[in-house]
Image (tube, rainbow, N blue to C red; front, side, top):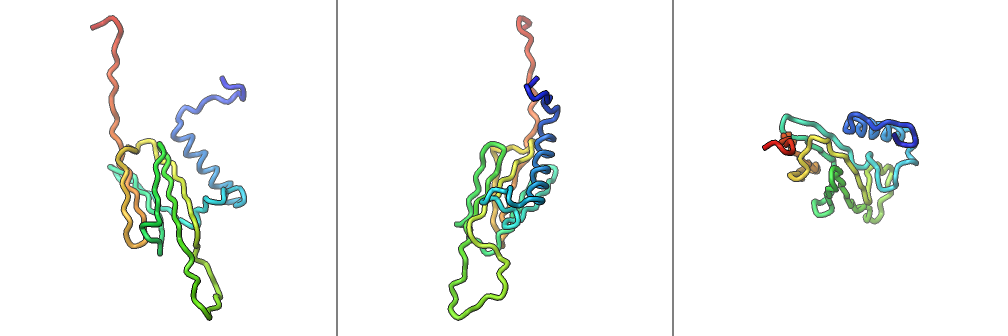
Length: 148
């Protein structure tokens, strides 16, 4: 048993999901605790699953596909975006600016059932869609030493 007296979770996937939810709630209560390059409001995310895959959709209106970078590190997906400000008009005095510009980064932990070796991404009409096929369970053969 670890020195802290805390037992290891029985279901690590569920434990990590709950931990992520708690972190998000804490970030909602205190936005200063969020890393500067991690602003979920700047890159809204929808995720859903079908029988065969998990799909992540990021809203990126006005972003060129060349300014989007998607990186996978194990079971973590990182989406980085550079959206240049288009405020070069002379003689214009802005009354309201609610659209976000600059560098954005969003990190998503992929579910355990995803086959992370076959991810693919599509970008159409301002929506980045990352398709994560679900992996099949692989049965492992158990050998008994000395019995052939």
